[in-house]
Image 1 (cartoon, helix red, strand yellow):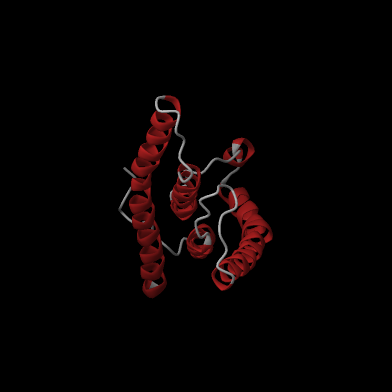
Image 2 (image 1 turned 120 degrees about the vertical axis):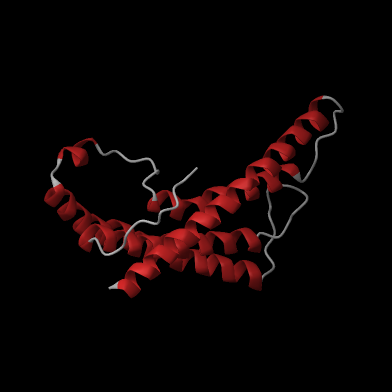
Length: 174
């Protein structure tokens, strides 16, 4: 049991660090957008690369924060009825809903994102949103990795909910 607890804590702590590092992407996003606004409105010379850079950086920030959100229950959810239930009611809902919705969704997302990632690398896919056309394989790889991390955190979460097997890491979000 201690081995499982240690693995769960490692997964949670790793996802905390991934989200913390990814959170610094907000600064380049701000720079990209400010630069584009200045170039577009003050110099009448819009850039061809800012749109792609912004959506890729923002996508990476959001994707890599998903497992953190699950680990620390900071994602948006409608829990009005859920909060009215007792401990056993919540356990029953979680035991039914996690396998039925979360893990089936993760299975589909992992499969689809893996195919997208492999095709992007295989065919050297580029973005068609701008004339710049940067490669999209890196962002599709981030998407796949984020689903792997989210699935691993989901396994930890269901074990936490069902058996109290894992103890949340002492590290709390800042």
